[in-house]
Amino acid sequence: MKAKRAIIGGSGVYEIFEESEPINVNAFGRDVTLYKLEREGREVFFLPRHGKDHSVPPHKIDYLGNIYALYSLGVSEIIATNAVGSIVPEVKPGEFVLPDQFIDNTRNRTLTFFSGEKINGWEPKIKLGDGTVREGVVHLDYTEPYCPRLRNLLGTITENLGEKVHHSGVYVCSEGPRFETPAEVEMYRHFGGTIAGMTTIPEAVLAREANMCYATICLVTNFGAGMQKKVTHEEVIELFNEKTQIVRKIIETAVFSDVENTTCNCRV
Image (cartoon, rainbow, N blue to C red; front, top):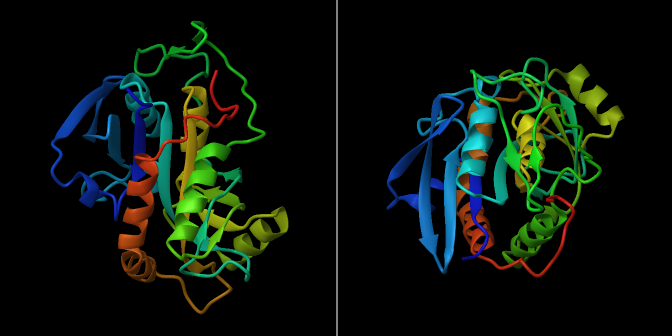
């Protein structure tokens, strides 16, 4: 059996799993709803980040439960999708970005499985490939927070579809659910940020702790506040809907592609 993969996202992905029945996985005493598809000898799971009705705002997402549920299913690679705003003029709405770095500007999220405390009475333990167990208090390296193998795969597929893709960038993650102010956008730009969003943290962090490869493909839906007249949620949804079929093609091609023969340092 090939490596199990998961998709975390929303629009454009549901259609891939339209014939799949939902399954519930218990993670730290809470149910996480996913969808499963098996094709070409590979199991793929879809996790709707904001819930199936898109009713959960970014700062209320059960990130720990989501990632731990995927770990418990044996998933080793995660491909995520994000709608983001650009904070630099050279990255334009309608283009794609494959971030290779992040800046964490969240405020109130639990960022780790390994705080030295139980989660709802459960003690997180991650079994690694070498047979050891990751538990207690853990400090990991995030020199490459996003998997270079999966990033390269996504970049090649996106280019082959004729889409403009930026192969690197810095994702600045804020708490949400509000959009950034012009002053914050300017600060993020001075920090070296490329795009701004609300969901890559702590997903990318937890995936590494759970010994998984993780990459995200980001669709730029707008310029940040102060770079255009006004930022609205309707504008974001409208542009994302225009690119829904492209996002679907990218994700569907990626999750069933073979990249096992290349290496990365994400997993032990």
